[in-house]
Length: 169
Image (tube, rainbow, N blue to C red):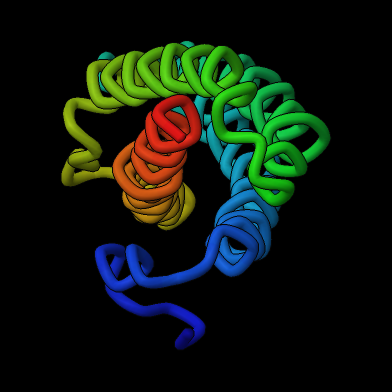
């Protein structure tokens, strides 16, 4: 597979190829993105605390999301992905249900970020750090949405289908 094909092209990938892509492209990237975004958010909140459009609470929201994502990704890497790689699709359905629930929570966190940042629209007086923060958040949001799509709509959907086939065999 290409390094970064369209998400739906991954429907033709093997489970190990898809898992490798998710871990290398998304898990690793989120682990880089969020600490940097938290640092930028703290700086913006400290410098611009007196402005009414300051994204107050953003750094704390991002820290919570980082903790939740790190826990989520570790469960995938240590439990779920090895099960799927071994073809244990039926047994993987309960962990998949947990991952889907956690994906919904990640979507809620993105909605909170949108609310705090007025939809990631920096005010006209925003400094370069503020603008860099919002640009980075937009990239992170796109990455996380693509990550969730690949897992929910490709990897987990294929596993659920394979679990049904295992049960009917």
